[in-house]
Image (cartoon, rainbow, N blue to C red):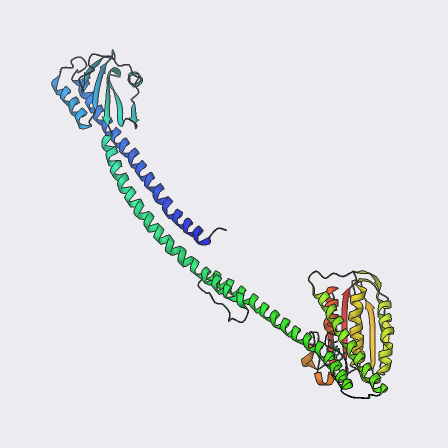
Length: 461
Ligand code: ADP
């Protein structure tokens, strides 16, 4: 894994150092070419003046003219160079070094100059500039002056400049390194702070919110992290509440069984009728325990992320009718009438088991939380895309402040009152989960003392 700190450090360093070095090289190169072209222009001017002098004084015919020879020597000394004069026969009539006079010189430059082309050439390796000047009179070229001047002085200057540039670059590199180290540290510090703050949370969720507000970006990350933490905290709270509710609900029937069994064991010569009565109570508590466990299992199964529906084409009217048939004895026991109205017969793709759970819970609640002589009306209707099931009762109703909570697990309105009515507070949670799995929706309207209406809408496809 690459380090962010190292990456920024390298980027800042390279961004500082590379331009320094490149700029240094460009300036030195620019200086060299400028110095060479200035020197070449100067030499050419001098040579042109001297060439006129040579022609006017007839130097080509008489190279012994002392004044002109002195001028040639002066030029040669001035530029630490050498001047050769060739006549029209390519014979060297003057060499300021005095070693080639009388010899012939037929170089490319000289030939080109006789063809009226002035040449100047810079030999970087051997460090000299060569300039040829035609010696002409009335447009006729009578000879050629070949001047070579040293560029050693320019190179010495460049060497000195290069040394200075190197010192400046080294200083710049040191400054850039220090600056990039400090910049990297200050850039990365908030991230390190953020990472430390997040690491502290590995212990649990009970820390206060983290706050690293050095930059806009770290503030955003901090906010996102705190939001996520809030969600995790509330998840953790509801998980803890769920576990404690489950433990409590599971313990209650077992505690009753224990009390019943202990009281039987504590008595001697218990009549058989009493045994029977107590055993019926124990069996009832065991059934209750079993119901809670089954409900919990249904919830857990539907809660799973990968929980799937096994849908099949189903006659909803028949499904509801069979549930009502099953619940009829319960309704009769409580003296509650059940009316089923199917406005339209409905076929839909549903998971019959899960949907039955939801519908059973709704109708059962309509019966349970009703009054003697009350009524539960179940209405089934269909639209092109959905079907609607309405379960309306004339029961006790739900207080407005409880309406939002009734779908929560283990939530029961008025626990003391609910004690008389059997239940564990899981029925509506199961119903809602099953409906949501079908991509449907459930809503409730209720008036205390008058009754409640649960409306379920589920897509048919
Ligand atoms: P329970 O097992 O207690 O019936 P539910 O999850 O089915 O659990 O319902 C939660 C609570 O909502 C019930 O305890 C009850 O107080 C209230 N409730 C549900 N349905 C009705 C209804 N039709 N009429 C009045 N109250 C209801």
